[in-house]
Length: 192
Length: 154
Image (tube, rainbow over the protein chains, first blue to last red):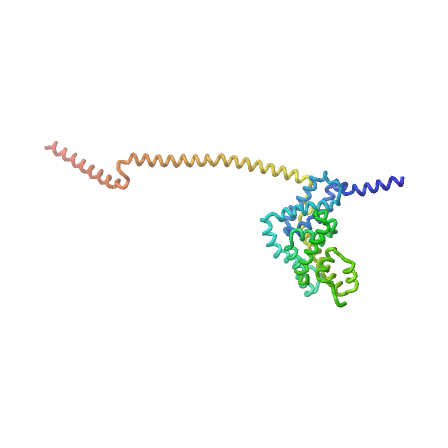
């Protein structure tokens, strides 16, 4: 019957996130790259990023029974990842190494990546310089600014998704994002 | 266009706080629109580099998560924990035993030295003198024997 089909369809749509987590292997395959990417860009250490991503999915696996589908699975996983990155950043021993890496490793990374592109030497030099400036500036951002910046401009989350993943209000997300962008622009040599 | 968007307005625009005035201005001012485009292009470059770096790193870690892995890990951790506890217990038992054995050896050596010291007739520095005395007394004894012989012969 046509009328009965609509509520069923709506119900399925509402339950979809919770159903998605039931096939946990599929959820891992789907969301692992994004979580790993966000964590890697945040901590800038491939080994630590691997461990934290593993930890993120382990926590999600243990808590999957409590996931009610109030938000998208990706947002829920990102919420766990944001907390793990925050806890990791609070580890003072790692902070030192993170700061040391931020200035050296990322510039090498940027250089290698740009070298692979089919660009003129001038364009390559400019791109490398700009990319290095953004990586460096993002390392100097406050933890919250960096998190919202990476979620917005690396993971393409919208403001509401970022608010859900970080537990901030949408307005707060906008403020942190604005401050992050202002710092990035300053690092690029553009007026604030 | 005589005035452009204030620099902060461009950051605000990129952050998602978009006012109708800014939108209208960007539609009319090619310079400001180009500035927004340049900034967006730089951020896109950053995004692409983050994705590529992540993909390169990730390729070495593909299939890293296995739902069964935590159980094996916990089991492994538990075994390692018990092994560490056993090693600590053995060490705790062995160290006093080793120390006792060493103490006993040291005590024995000390007692031997004390025995040697007590049984010594004279202090160590005087031992050479004692030897001299012994040898002279031996020779005098021998001489005495000779004397006795001569006496008897007499």
